[in-house]
Image (cartoon, rainbow, N blue to C red; front, side, top):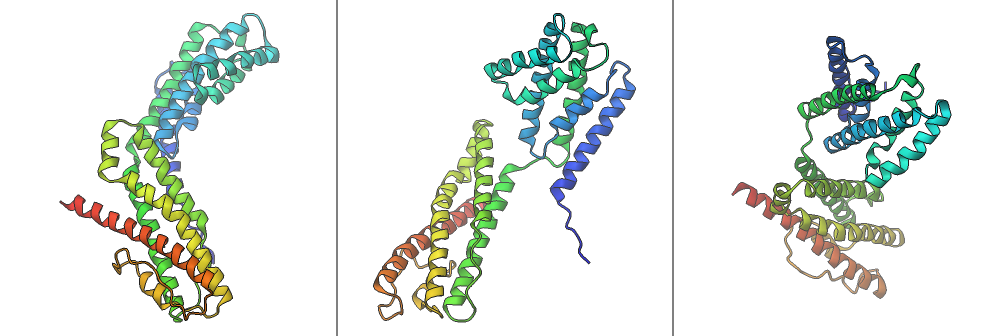
Length: 321
């Protein structure tokens, strides 16, 4: 019997969206002035996002798109009607939003244009109607933002640390597996899947970029936790890690079994060997060119890996002081 694992983020997102819709409907029923509950509900659906920063961006785009789309439609409908009016409105709205730098509200403005000119009695549109629909939309936006802030708010620094520790654990595990293999205790580990490593590094960098845009306080936290140094080492280690894995895989395929006691000792990341250079015994089964390549790439990889580990240890020590 296969049991599907439930994604916790998807569950949280569904609860946030459901509660936001419930509260919005309750407000619309309580206040008679909201004539079209469709507008605040559409705002909730478009605004609620799994990332807090995207929620705020969507909210800004939603209200800008509603106001600008409504104003353009109001001006156009006095002269044109039907699908011709929609077409002309879009020809004006899209370049206008791009010119003003409001690209995030483009999709909303398009939806509003089609809705306003497609409802029954659209020729009765006036400034009062547009103002009311903008207020209706604002209600949905405010509910979505409040719920997103109250239920499971994002802690980007904690998420960055989790991804960082996950990468370090993966690195230690792979080094241990290769160490066991080079001693002849186990077979060669399966090939590394670099996609997951790249994905985690890109996510950390994305979160760092968001923190940098939030002001001096957030910048100070990034500096205190040495995230720029961590990412600089990870970028170098990423390439060296993949290259080292592929080199060991190629050598293991050509020389079976591949046993390198000199490399085995240094692959133990907990073994502090300083800046000792990797030197392969000349009596090994490797050719001269293979030994030189492995020594050069292995030395670079091990130095960066140990530097990342030492930096992580130093940051933890400072956090306890």
